[in-house]
Structures are given as C-alpha cells and as structure tokens.
Image 1 (cartoon, rainbow, N blue to C red):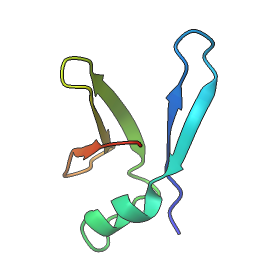
Image 2: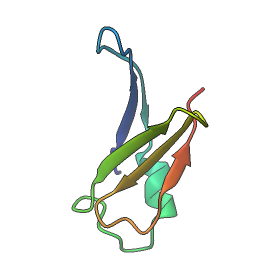
Image 3: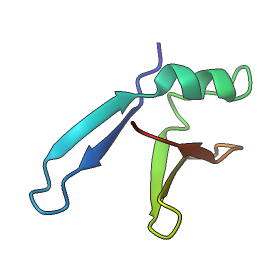
Length: 69
C-alpha cells in the first residue's frame, strides 16, 4: 500500500482541516513498476482563478487535477 496524503489548511490558523489518502488512486494511475516510494509526491498547487488543485511528484510522468468535497 502506498500512503500519500494531501490536505487542506486553514490559511489563518495553519491548522490542517481536511486530509485524504490519495495513494491508491495515484499508484493505479502511474505506470506499472513505477517506484512511488522513491519518486514521491512533492508538488501541490492551487489555481485561485479556476479554483483547481493540482498534484505531481518527483519524476512523475503526469500532473493530476484533484477535487476535495
């Protein structure tokens, strides 16, 4: 099992207010044999104009758009 956590922080307090384990989803989307233990999640971006969240990782061949409900 691959454990990758993404979270939402309150900008005023800095407290984590929501979190999600996205490891299984990401592992299923990356190529077979991709070493996700070495090529870790390390990029999270928020586009304030479109209100979209993007994640990627070290040497990942894809950029993922994610949505939290």
